[in-house]
Every structure is written in structure tokens, then in C-alpha cells.
Image (cartoon, rainbow, N blue to C red; front, side, top):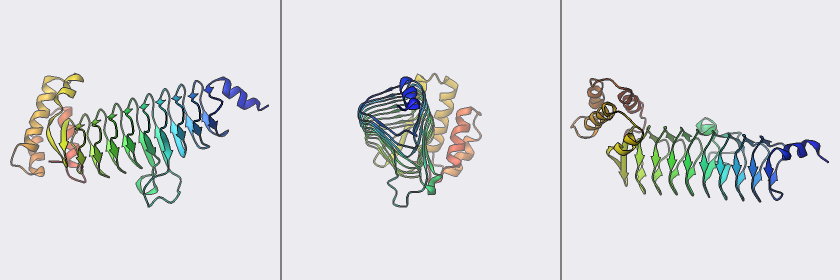
Length: 267
């Protein structure tokens, strides 16, 4: 009898039909459902629940108290044709909900070698997060939301169902993207974008109110929005004008994002 395996299995709930590589690192309280496959280089943190028919592979690290639903594919190799088997990683934080048919790929050498997902995110059915994407915390990607490679999504953003985001784009903090949108440029923080291609329509007012942003903060975001999108100024001129407004954390966040945008902001 394998005493180590017996002791390990007694601290978790692994279904008899699941295939778990003996070198996989499985923490106390983990549940693994029927017919799921956990491969050699995987680490799973405490109290994470993995449903039936899930495959977790690659150099994948999953934190604590996540829930992964049936048929998800976690840590498969990149679909990037430049990927040739190099060692790369997928790192998932804590308390994420990953629904049915979600696909999360490891990184590539050309993108820093890691795909990273923070904490408290909800990835709905059939969402796809490609290689080298970096997701913050408290993000929602609705059903069939699709992220190409090298995308950054900041904290609190919401990606609508069937939306597709072009590689190397960035979506700012507390931004929201409407369903079926095609995003080909960066979406600044606190903004609401929609369309094909997506353009910024207004600020994410409802989202800001739900998160208890102050009236003063919301007003400063409105002023920044008007300067960027409702004036006759180009982006450089708008940045200079926003810098003259009463300084708030939100304005600093917007200014930093716009200044550092490599693809240009969606207009």
C-alpha cells in the first residue's frame, strides 16, 4: 500500500475515477470530481473544488477556495503558433469561480511566460483567456467572452457576453464592455464601451455607484470623460487639460492609463 498516497487522499475528496498524477501537489480540503485529470506539474491550494470531467495540466498553480465547474480546460498549451513547448505557466489566485467549458492557457516565452488570474473573479460559461493575459481581481467575463493573447484586464472590469478583445489590448479598472463588442483599442478606466468596433459611450455610472464611489469621484470621472471624448482636443491635448482638473485618485488612474496606452484608447 502507498502510505503517502493514502494519507494524502484522506485529507481531500478525490473521486475514484479521477486521475491524479502522484507528483501533483494537492492541498488539504481539495475536492476532485469524477473523471477529472490532474497532471504532473499542477499545484492546487486548500479547499478548491474541481468538478467532473475537468482537465488541469501544464505548469499550473491554483490558489485556495476556487471552484472549477465541469468540462473546463485549465493550463493547456497556447494556441500561439510561435509556442514550441517551452516551459510556461498559468497562475490562478484565490476564490475564483470558473464555469463550464472555460479555457485558460499557459503563457509563452514571447509574453513573459505566464498567464495570470487574480482573486475573486467570475469567468462564465465558455470564456476563453489566452496566453500571457494578466487579469486582476473582481473581474467578470460573461458567457463566451474571448480574450486573445497578451491582454491586461484591471480590477473590477466587466466583459460582456460574446465580446472579443484583440491581442495586446488593455481594459482599465471598473470599465465595462457591452455584449458582442469587438475591442481593438484600449478601454480607459471607469468607462463604458460598446460596438463593433467598440467605442466609449459614457462612464460606468451604475457600476461606480454600486461600488460606493463618492459624488466627487464620479464628477471627476465625468469631467475626464468629457475632456477625452466630448471636446475637440486630441488625446495629448486632453491629457494636458485633465491634468489641470482637481486631483483625485480616479483622475490619476485615468491619466496613467491613457499616457501608457500602446495601442491607443478607443474613441
